[in-house]
Amino acid sequence: MPLRKTANSYLRRLTGYEIRKYRPPVRKPKPAPKPQPVAKPLPPQPPTLHDFTKLSVMLEVSPTAFLEALGWPADEVAKVADEFDEVSERLDQRYSQTETVFPPRWGVEQSTGLTLYGLVRLLQPSVVVETGVADGRSSFMTLSALERNGHGMLHSFDVRAEAGNLVRGHAQWNLTISDAKDPRRSFTEAIEKLDTIDLFLHDSDHGYPNQMFEYESTWPKIPVDGILASDDVDLTKAYVDFVTRTQQRPHFLFDRRKILGAVRKQEVDTD
Image (cartoon, rainbow, N blue to C red; front, side, top):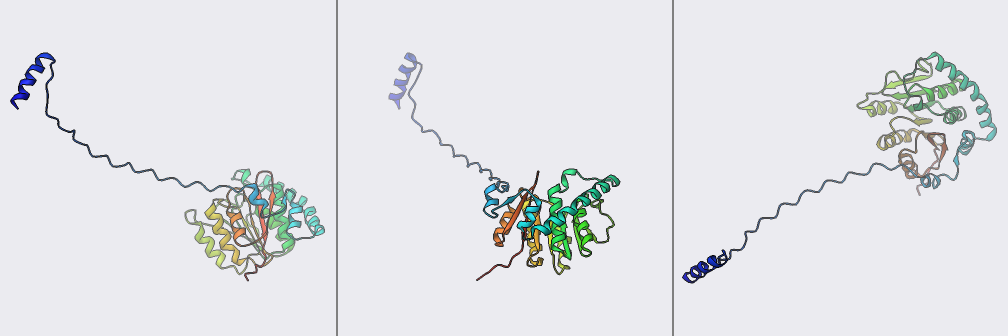
């Protein structure tokens, strides 16, 4: 100790520094690692062209060819296609007389409208179910065909009370306004009361879960040769996934803005 003091005395005079006893630095505890942010799940991806072509050899742009691909003879398809001009004229007249409240783009396009009319005329269904009504353009096509058939009921579902102005009061139409917070409950309750659904058209919420819910709810009610159709099948893979899982052969109609999918139910050999 005296030696260090003496040495430090000289060092301070000469350099301004002194010798100190070494003390290792106190180690600071390592900070806890920051929690990594939870990765957000990727949004559902829309189907690709390959998804469609691997399920259906022909991707149709003609509604008459689409109906033929579903199994009806060309002469029968041509007959109902000729009827459609008069239906379109009546629809235009109805639009001029009716206050509409929904965006025009929500309605089905011309080729899809002819397809729906043709499906109802050719299939001759007793029960048709559709989800998503808006102003009622697709409902008008369906009810026009049911009128000409002379029988059948259309059961429609929407969450807006003002839906369906184009067909309001039609004798062959039954509209259910579902609770917007829980639309599945009233849909399920109504579907359970139906013995069969000869033709189903999805055109409501196009999110994957809702599409799949509606397909799965109605499929057991659809008889062999009945139709499961869905508008906007290009928005999610729900339709592609469903027909793949049920081993069905769908057909796709490429309209101007949307793609319509339809499958005519066939028995599946489970052996």
